[in-house]
Image 1: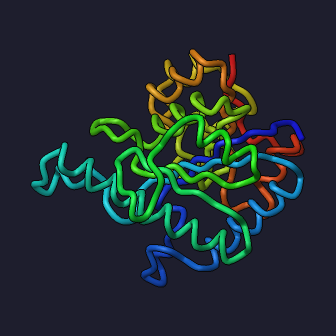
Image 2: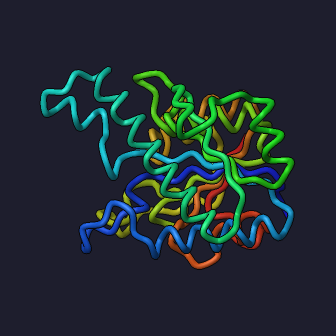
Amino acid sequence: MKYKRVLVKISGEALQNKAKGLNHDPVILSTVADQFKQLLAMGAEVAVVVGGGNIFRGLAGETKGTDRTTGDYMGMLATVINSMAIQNALESESIHTRVMTAISMPAIAEPFIRRKAIRHLEKGRVVIFGAGTGNPYFTTDSAAALRASEIDADVLMKATKVDGIYSADPVTHPDATRFEQISYQDAISKQLKIMDAAAFSLCMENDIPIVVFDFFKPNGMVEVVTGKDSGTLVTH
């Protein structure tokens, strides 16, 4: 393996199937479980941060009259729903998991405690971090960078709908250039929207490489961890 302890950032939208009207597509969740099972079999330690955009997004709520702080807390609760959906999919494949949240809700999850999270990883459990950072005005990208730093992750794997970082949106700009590798500074200065500036900066300060890869590519996670396909690597 190129990376042993990994944190995977999955957007909420990646779990949904708009064509079928599903917020949580069982086929997508099953695919995630299969890939995590392979990573664990290889000896990797896996943590997850999931977004909540398939259910509610604070910024979107603000445009419709919801107070930004209230909207962000609603979005955090949406990430907990997604965390439980991922947990259910993994445990249906006999993968041991723990959901840990930044907002205390002991009936359904453990509170985030760094030492406990690391111990769970060492025991081969997939740790799913919900509720973002627990604070409004911070994205789940920032939460992923924070948790990756706290658990001493070897890499932050950012799952997207494309196979890396491009100079522009490749969907609307077919001539966009794909970067095989880019520095944190360039990613920030070029205002590449694949992650927010706070997340890039936190990873830069703590020397955590970021790999942006295609979430829907078969065995994409396994290829990143083994170094067969690095997507776009963001590093110093």
